[in-house]
Length: 461
Image 1 (spheres, rainbow, N blue to C red):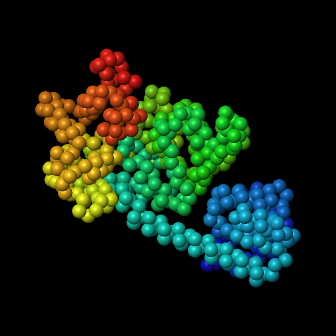
Image 2 (tube, rainbow, N blue to C red):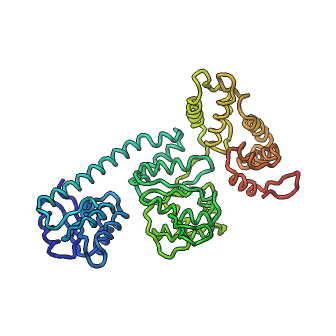
Image 3 (tube, helix red, strand yellow):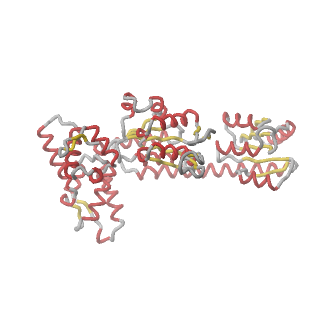
């Protein structure tokens, strides 16, 4: 289709003029510059459908320009031209992502044909990406179960923000599905064909996390026997999901701020910055605004991350979704069994599930259904088949509400945490498994509520 924008780069003004005149007659919009540096400036400020560049230029040559353009946009075709035909440079150009390699003495029709082919290829790729995104839009969010008003708001927000490049902060309790939402945003975005990389910042010590995020150079520390790319570089062109970003140290926070401000990283032990093109999605189950007020999290980083906040509701606030989730997990785990061994769920058991507060959210519900499907000996899951904690929680909650009409959810959670800890003799790994939360979340809740082991009469840390 005529009207495509072509950037011509050649330090010979006569060649720029020749190509410009010829291609404008074909209906293309032409911008011509005489250096690789000027070409990059144009490319950053304007949209182009094709780049044609000379290979031998003073300053930045055509191969270097090709490499820089591909870092910014993998999809744009680049045609390399030269007055000196060389098989070696032709192979190098193609290996670096050039669409085609032409000698300047090529006939006009050959040049026009190569340009048409390059633009046709770009058009087909763009159409394929649009079709894939449309298919994703109709299927991606279906993997996130929910029809409640709370979740419908989340789905609408995902639709609005997916195709932007804005930084997103997903807030929600552990087990609410923050990574699922991050993946849905990625696969509905313009970056869907590029990597989705994730890391849990709370799962690694500072020194290891720094190396994982930014990479390191050989010899930068004991055991660094070779250069290693960080995950920011691995995610180039795609989306990087930082889970539990509130767990990062001040040192890591400074480096993350640099990524957001300068779009570059410096590997551990390195001195040369590396440009990165990634969309950052962060997630936290902590109150980062409170952490900023307590000087535990950098205010400037918080405001950089919190461009578009997405708040995921806990399962106790979307009880209408519990029957849907139960059906989904029943099907998932029944599919692993013979048809005769598959389970349904009784109304009484469903009522208990709906009325439970689910401190571990969707992840805890999934664990409960998996356990019930495996252990239930009849064809229907009964109330008696559910874990004791669900039935005990229901009874204790009713008693607490009777005794104290103004009881809060936090007080209920504190009472329940203490009971499970005491029932497990303060074995925190076992307690976190029963609660359906990870160990780090349990430690934070113990500290938050100031829970103590009555047997030891000392604070639990």
